[in-house]
Image (cartoon, rainbow over all chains, first blue to last red; front, side, top):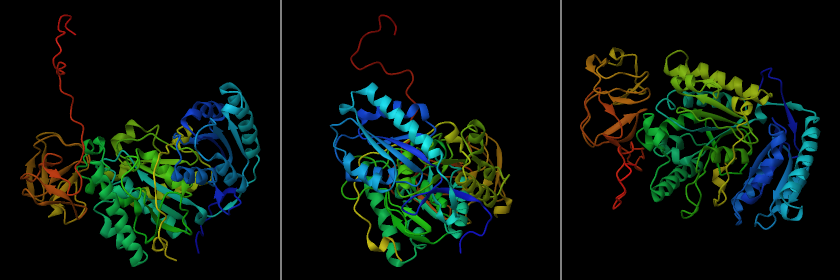
Length: 402
Length: 116
């Protein structure tokens, strides 16, 4: 059914059936102590080799799963693991998962490799060779229905929920109609929207799961004493978490909600999915996501090829491994930060453009970026990455109705 | 009636008791709210809210057609609706306060000799 448009998309075929829109080398530090060496290894080829990793020395099942998913993400073509040697991260399992996926993989252990300088030299040589080999990978045709697109809003203000977020919702509706997979998230920023969101669920049992995920977030944030609400939100005209939530909710558009996933769960088919990013169980390890990049990383671990990032105050971030399209909600901010912004949704505020017109612009930009066009944050070298400690229970059967 | 409201203000849902500024508005600037002329009691930045009608303490503030919290004070049409008169029904909002100037001297310290 899906796309009848003449959009010539092409991508990189992976053994698991998915297709990537980028073909990058992941340079992965397995503890903070290996971060400097990883950074130096990636530096000479920084547009093609992105740094990801986990800073903790103690094991965490969530972090293991996240790095396994990211190292076998469709945009990842080859992986270099950089270990100090004494950390707890299970590098043997990670290396096996990557090798089984058909990707070139190499592990360098600093303590076994002569130290910092020797490891950097060995790593740079391996990555240079991998980048050269990946550049020769032939591309295959790709359909819109192969695409997985995520959305996040960060640095929100009173304009976000009026201009940028509804415009992303419009683009999401078109992508879902074309068979693509779309993911929205941050249940802590859906507080107050649970009933209207539940009314869009594919089944009554899923509606109950959606409600429960928001109630869990409300309990979690109440324990922490702060909502998912930053000082800049208030300065930008937002007063309460409910108000911020209604604006954030608009990103999800009008489509039926097909399922609820947790970080690392790959949606089984096209449709609109809510990602529950708030940990399960009692409050441990602090805030669910300490800043926007943590959420981008979690949606990429669920297969997102790219992220639509709506910002009112003006975030400048991108992401390792997946392009980020930045959508300015506030026209004054767009003028101040146009070197960082891909789309000016602030024209909706001033009355110069409709939500549908900007939604179409976003949709077209998604296809262009999937076809290889670079985003502002990619050109600027913004390849941020955050992964911290968390814990989740697996999703139940009613979260993904057939 | 909303068609008698200034086009610098956005009504997101007919149920709302607040309007959103489409552009920055200056202190004292005349605005039109449902046929009533009001002068802005304070400057307002883009994206901020003003009251569309009289609101009493404890009333729900309605935006996008849904409650976004409760009023903590009486609010007149045209008044800025923000942290000083609206609170969440879920979790408290956090905002930066301007730093106190001049800074308080360290408690118990007595080091004024050099004037630093």
